[in-house]
Length: 358
Image (tube, rainbow, N blue to C red):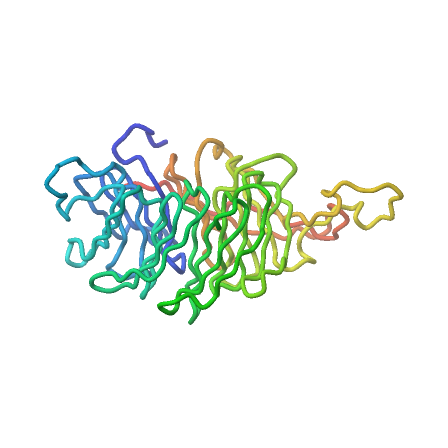
């Protein structure tokens, strides 16, 4: 068990664009692991604590943000210093900063593509060209976004950025392929403020969860239409991480209650309540009419920890911050059983795990 007070306490976990690698930021620097098979690839030390690291595929460029506010030197801050108001594009081949972006507020999230740098601040999102120097292209106001919610599609000629709109519960979608946004759509996803969102690789679907956490909604980013509505549960929970599989057939959802749900983007695989198929004379509660996950599991020891989900083929990978553990889960078909009126029951089983050390 990792010690919460040690110098390697993990601040954030992030996957690269194809989930083939993941990075952990901690008080002494950052580490990068190969996802499967899990193995340490990079270990870097810094003089300041690191709050987050964003990878650019498997290249030598990474975005690094510090944990602490900028020092009050009065004579300018050296570009070698990382802090919470600065995005440093780190060239790991040369072991030095390549680009610097400074802000008046703490940076909540950074996402990189080969041509764009997306920076998330507490109430705005800024888009830059990945150039020397970085060229500002657009800025968008958002609702309060302390969790730095934002996502960028990675397998599209027209990359789409999704982030909270100015009105709580709404999603703002922008095409950032050109110097001027070509798509500017706002989707009314929830009544409550957003807690989590995710785009699929092509940017055609956006999944959202509010702070209520009972419903997961998937909208078309092209039309704004509701494509799927899934019920995660009946009790309130915070959805802390959510990712589409690479083939868009599944959606993994992780909550702060330590429960992993896998929703199939094929309605026949997900569970339906038995009463939904029965003629009932009285009005039924909404949850009887809901589409539930194809399978779920409550992970032992996960309550109080924060996990980040990714995909390795058809299996789900979870990286846990506090315990510093890598886990792999797979869907297993169990024929001959009945649940909610279905002939086949699916379950989630842990098939591998490893403690992360560096």
